[in-house]
Image (cartoon, rainbow, N blue to C red; front, side, top):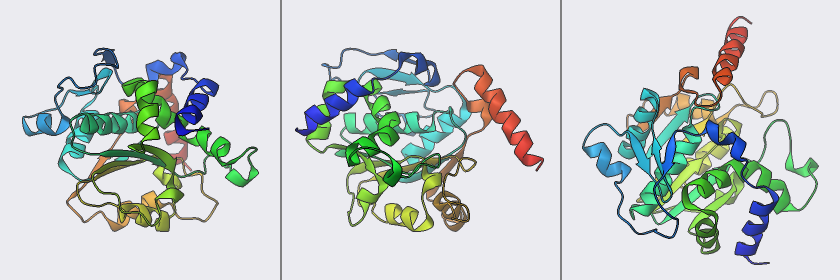
Length: 271
């Protein structure tokens, strides 16, 4: 089975659930996926001329809803390394993927790499059924979903087949130098300090990296330090690294999600 067939099988086995579309920042169609080459404003150029209110991708124009979302995209345009920290539903991963697609569309990068540590919610790959691809794909599905939403399945499959887009576990980054690339490390709270250092030191010339995570949702074994928390402490004095902190007020999912997050935050603060 070639790469295109593999990713088609993945898409058919786990199609994007349209009922979850309310979790994404506001967007509208901006044309057919076949119209890949039409000009669109780049995040980088918009940043140079003032506030950014929307991101153009191949299929969507995504409107930014909150000041933190706007600050986040401004930081991505300004800094080569960025951290987006906050609860689920704030758009930190989706907007990072949108910025990556926009940069690729405008020939600012040659590759997009979407990376996740393959340990979440107490599950370990060794205890899951199936071969490696079957084990890894559920962890990477949110990244595939965002790409399909913004570029269309066929275009994503072609770019994956040509290794222009890579969606892979963090361990696959070891030993590489990533130049002219837009790298997104998602769920970074589940990295170890060594893994975080490994990823950050892979970044080469002409590349950007966005590290997203929620420090309240660490799924590492008890006693294991989070690479995200450690990085924020160690790198806090470097002014060329951007940090955007999202709050429950930035949540763009169902209104109850915001209240649920706030209730849990209050309960944890009282412990």
